[in-house]
Amino acid sequence: MEIKGFVDVSLVDWDGRVSSVIFLPRCNLRCPYCYNSTLVLHPGELPTVPFKEIEDYLKQHRDWIDGVVITGGEPTVHEGLLNLCSKIKGMGFLVKLDTNGTNPGMVKALIEKGMVDYVALDVKAPLKEEKYSVASGINAKILLGKIRETVKTLLDCKVESEFRTTLVPTLHEKADVEEICKEIRGCQKYVIQNFKGGVETINPNFKGLKPFTDREMKAFLTLAKKFVPNTILRGAPTLSSQMER
Image (cartoon, rainbow, N blue to C red; front, side, top):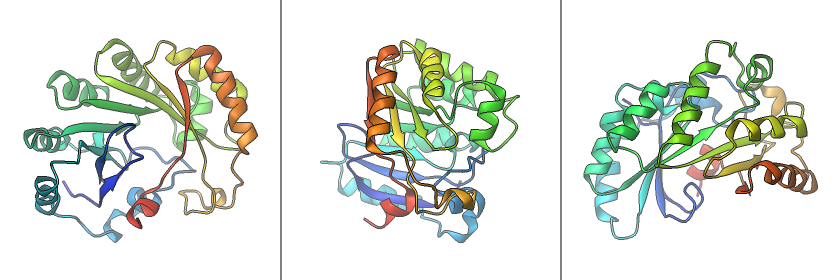
C-alpha cells in the first residue's frame, strides 16, 4: 500500500491533539468539490513516502506526537489499512480514521480489533439518492445503505467519532443541513466546514466558486445546533496546504 503524503505535525486534523497525517491515494467517490484531486485521480503523479521514514519520525518524536490521522482519498479502499493501523498502534500512538463510510465492514473491523481511537465520517449530503449522487459525483444508489450502516455503527459504538459536512454553494442549502442532522441525531459531534475556493478541484468549475460568507456559515451552525447541539464550525485544510506548512 503506497503512502502519497505525510504531514509531520498538525494541530488542526484532530481536535485537542498533536498529530501526524498520512495520506492514502484513490477514492471510490468523485466529489466535484474535492480539494485533493491529484491524490484521487492521478496519485501516480505524487511521490511515494516510504513507511520507514514515517516510522522513524514517529519514534523520534513520540514524546509530543499524540496520534496519527489516516486520510485520503478514501483509506478504506485499501485492504492493507488494518495492517497499517496495527503498525501505528504497535508503536504506541493513537489512530484517527477519516472515511466516507462506504466500507462499513472495514470500519467495524477496525473498531472491533481496537485499531482506531477516533473515526471521522464525511456526510456529503442528505442520505437521498439524488442529493448524494450530485454531491459525491457518482450514482450513489448502491452506496447509501452502506453509508447508513457506518452511521449506525458510529452512533452505537463507544469509540470517539464525529460526523462532518463540507458545505458547498450550489450543492447545499439550509434544508440539507436539517436533513443531515436528523439522520445523525445523537452523534457525539457534528462538524460543518466551509468550501474553500481557489484550489484545484475534481470538477474544475468548482475552483472559482465563491464560498459561503461567514454570516451564512453561522446561520447553518445555528440551524444545526437545533437538532445536534454539539455542532461546531471548523475550517477545511487541504493536502496541498498542509504539505506546504
